[in-house]
Each structure stands twice: as C-alpha cells, then as structure tokens.
Length: 207
Ligand code: PRP
Ligand code: URA
Image 1 (cartoon, rainbow, N blue to C red):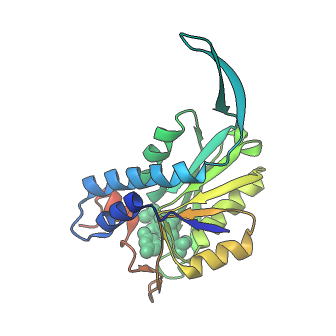
Image 2 (spheres, rainbow, N blue to C red):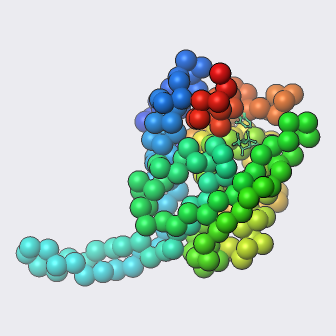
Image 3 (cartoon, rainbow, N blue to C red):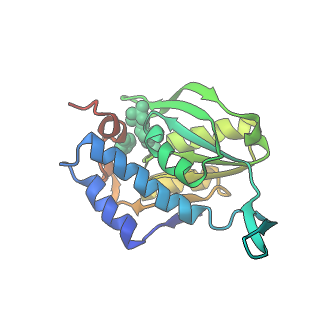
C-alpha cells in the first residue's frame, strides 16, 4: 500500500531538492519542508480523543492526538527528515536504526538499533529519504517487528517501482508515503532520475 503526495507545494520543493546545483544547506531545508508536508498527509487518519477546552467564552469540544508516536530515522540520511516530522509531532519519541548499503552487494548492513519501549504499543514511523532496492526499509521494518512493534508506517521522499514492490511483498500491511515514484534503478542501484546520494547531499560529504 503506497501513497504519493502530489500536492503542488511538495512537487515544487521536490524539483528544487533534485537539482544538482542545490547545496547541502538548502538541501537540508528542503528535506525538512518536504517531510513536514508528507507527514501532514500520512497522519491524517491517526486516532484522536475528544477533550473539553475552556475558551474565553465557553467549553469547546476539541480533539487531541491519542497515539504514542515513535519516529525512527534510518541512519544516516533519515536524520535529515527528523526535524520536519518533529515540527509536526513535537511530542514524538525517537528511535534509531543504523544501516548502510554495502557498496558491492548493495545489501543493507545493520550497525545500530535503539528503540523506546513505546514502539511496541504506539505507531512507529520509519523515515529515510531514499527507498531504492527497498532492502534497507525491509531491514528496518524487520528490526522494529522483532522489537515488538505492530503499527508501522514508512515515509520517504523518493522511491521507485522495484523498491516499492519488495517492501510491499515482505511487509504488505505497512503503508508507504512518498513524494515521488521515479522511473527505475540504475546499475549501481541508484534511483533514476532520483536526487543522487541523499546522505552525502544532506551532510556535505560528497565534495
Ligand atoms: C541510503 C538511503 C537508504 C538506502 C536506500 O543509505 O538513505 O538507507 O541507501 O537503499 P536501498 O533501498 O537499496 O536499501 P546509505 O546506504 O547510502 O547510507 P547513509 O544514509 O549512511 O549514507
Ligand atoms: N541511496 C541514495 O542515497 N540514493 C539512491 O538513489 C539510492 C540509494
């Protein structure tokens, strides 16, 4: 189950973040802004509870979010989306998955994991800008499920048909929200046209 956020404001920012001329400062700002928009849409159906709020005039029936939310950035590039999601859900807890893609095999290698216990009872949101082969996302979901998480969603910025197919085959109940579904993976398993290496562009490590 996947959803593409087609809103013009998201697509405009996507055009800017893809641009090879966009430097790491602007890239980080855009990653934050795009994440906020996607998250806004992804959370539109989460549970709320009714609360009474005393306004200056009288009591208003209001709604508050009734969910423990655990945001799980996949290190390293997922950190570039953390600020955006915390803008929207400032009370969220944060867990971490450390994964990198082996340059030869393109398979994810796990090197770190730390989740708050609320991941077992609340909703866990995996954030990683690139869902390419899908191997890293599948591994992150596997790790969360092994910890005891039951309610999981994925937010990325750019993906492709190959990656979506793998995640949907391995974890069909996990919804995926993205700003873009690109054409294909190249021979190095990079998304085309994509935006390049998200971690390098976020953190200025490419050149
Ligand atoms: C990137 C990206 C994903 C992964 C996607 O991380 O942030 O985690 O690759 O590829 P996949 O879908 O084929 O698994 P990378 O391995 O470059 O590590 P980094 O974030 O530390 O730069
Ligand atoms: N990781 C990235 O950062 N970009 C891709 O296109 C694929 C994997």
